[in-house]
Length: 109
Image 1 (spheres, rainbow, N blue to C red):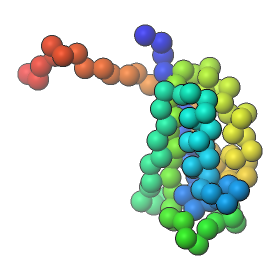
Image 2 (cartoon, rainbow, N blue to C red; image 1 turned 90 degrees about the vertical axis):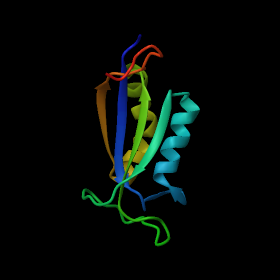
Image 3 (tube, one colour; image 1 turned 90 degrees about the horizontal axis):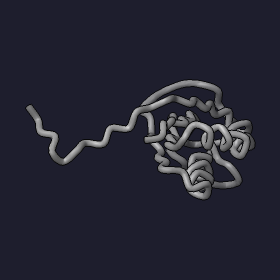
Image 4 (cartoon, one colour; image 1 turned 45 degrees about the vertical axis):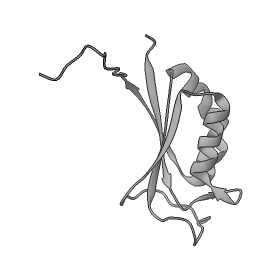
C-alpha cells in the first residue's frame, strides 16, 4: 500500500477568494486534481494571520481544509494554490499518516 499524507490548510472561514469562500476554492481545486479526498472542518476558536477581505455574512472563526493523497502529488499541488494561500494568509502543513482499514474478520476483544 502506498504511503499517504495529509495536507492541512488552516485559514479564516470568512476569507473570500474572488467572491466565494477561500476554503471552497481549495476544495474545488483538490477535486479537479483527483485527490483521494478533501474535507473542511470548522473550528470553535483560534488565532493567526488575518485578511481584510472578510465577508460579513460568512461564518467566523478558523477552519481547516484537509486533503489526503500521496506526498509527491500534494507537494506538486502547493504551487497551484499559492495564489489562494498568499492572498488569504493561510498556512499549509504536510503530515505523514497511516491509513487503517479494518478487516471483516477483526473482532473487538
